[in-house]
Length: 618
Ligand SMILES: Nc1ncnc2c1ncn2[C@@H]1O[C@H](COP(=O)(O)OP(=O)(O)OP(=O)(O)O)[C@@H](O)[C@H]1O
Image (cartoon, rainbow, N blue to C red; front, side, top):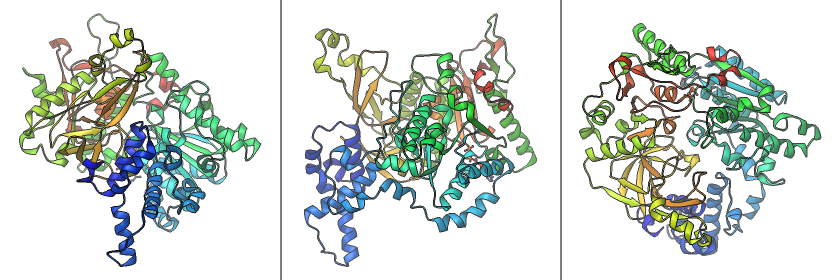
C-alpha cells in the first residue's frame, strides 16, 4: 500500500485494499486495516472541505474511519461481500443507512424519468424479431407469468440491444431486473451487469444437488424476493447445475412468501437466458464430448419448459457495409461463419481417415507460412509494429489467436522481443496449500520448481516478463462495476517492485490508469493431489491469446494461428467471428502437404443443436 500510495489516488488505494483483502487471505484483517486506513481518505476529506467551503476543515479519526468503511462497503457489496462478512468494523455513524437493504436500494436507484425518455427510441429501433421477443418478455413480467425464455442468436444479432430495451422498460416501471452473464467480459455489456457467480453466490465446486450460498433473511434473499426479471447472457457457457442451483434456491426463498412459488421455475420469477450454442460450451475439466453435452443447459430439467425466441439478422455486419459490393461480401462472410458454426460447411476427407471434421478455408483469408511461421503471423497481424507499438488504439484493434497456451506464450515472447524497452521479470511465489501438514515424501515429489512449471487456464505465469508499452489482459474480476474484469485489456505504463501501473484500453473505463498489486491465486486441479497457491500480478501479455480467452473480444484485425487444429466444440467459429469485417481476418495453417493445403478441423457437437428444434438453420 505504501508503494502504491506514491502514485495512486485514495479512491484507487481503496480498490487495492479491497483486492488484497479478497484475494490474499490476509491473516489479521483488523491489523491490516489499522496499518492502512490513513492512505484511504484524501478524497473524502477533500470532499468535506469543499462542502464546508473551508480548506482547513478537518474530521476526527473515528469519523474518517467511518466514512472510509462506508465506501469500502460499497466496493465489497458489489463483489458479494461486506465490511461485516470480511471482518472489518461496521461503520457506526452510517449504521442507520446500512439497516436499509442497500442491494435493493442500488437496484431501485435507476432514474425512471431518464428511462422513460430513452424508451421510445430504444423500442422503435427494434427489428421485427427483437420486437416480438421484447413484447413476449415484458408481457410475462407484467402478468407475473414466471416464464423461462432462451433468446438464441448468433453474435451481432442484437441480443444486447434487446436486453437494453427490456431492462429500460421494466426498470422504468420501478421494478427490479437483475442482469448477469456467465463471464465477466459479457457482464460489462449489461447495464448493472455482474457475473452470475458473484450475483447469486453460486458455489465454485458444483455438485448435482448444489444450491446457491444465499441465507434466508439476508439482503440478497430479500433482493431475490423483490426481483421481477433475471437476464442471464452467455448462458450456454455455464454448467446446467448453475441454473438448477439458482432454481432450487429461488423456489426455497420465494416459497416462504407464498407456498405455490415452490412449485414454479425460479420461484415464479421470469428468467431470460441468452447466447449462442455455436460458441464455447461449459468447460468440464479433463472430460470429453459426452460430459460437455451433459453439462449444457439443454440437458437440464429446466430446458423442457424453456421457450425459445430466435434472432437471425446480423445487425453488426450490416452496419458496416456501405456499398452493394461490400454488403454482398459481408453477407457472404456472415453466412460462411454460420455455416462453420453450425457444422454445415462442406467437409473434406483427409487421406483414408474416417474423420469428417476437416473443412477448406477460403483462399482470401490464408497467409503463406513462409520460412518463419512466427514472423509471418506477427507481420500479418502487427504491421508497422516498430512505429505503432505504443499506440493504444492500434493494440486494442488486434490480436493473434491460437488454440493452445504453449503457442500463446512463445508468440507473446517473440513480439515482446521486437519492441524497445527494458524487460522486467516478476517471479511468482508458489506453494502448496496446507503444505505444513503434508508428508515429506509428497513435498519431495512436488518441489517448488515443479509448482513453478504449472500454468494455463486463468493462472498467471510463474515468470512474468513485461515491458512498458506491452498489452496485457487482466485475469481477475478486479472492479466489475468499472469494467475491470477477467478479459479486460490494458497497456503497461509503469513497472514498480510491488505494483504495476496500466492504462485500460477496453471496457467502460478505457484510458483510465490503475495500479495493480500481486494477488493470491488458488489453483485446484484434478491433475494433482493438492491445491496450489500462486502470488503474482493478475495479468498476462496479450499480443496473442488462446481462442477460449478471445471469446467476447471484438477485434478489427484477427490473426488466427493454427500450428495444429482446434480441439473442442465451437473454437474455430469463436476465432473466426472475433472480427467485425472479412477484411480483418488472416489465417496461418502450419505444416501442410499440398493436397490438403488450406484445410483445418472444425469441431462441432451437432447434438447440441438437436435440442433447439430447427434453430441450427438460423
Ligand atoms: N435494432 C437495431 N437497430 C440498430 N442497431 C442495432 C439493432 N440491434 C443491434 N444493433 C447494433 O448491432 C450491433 C450488434 O448488436 P448486439 O451487440 O446487441 O448483438 P449481440 O447479439 O449481443 O452480439 P454478441 O453476441 O456478439 O455480443 C451493435 O452495434 C448494436 O448497437
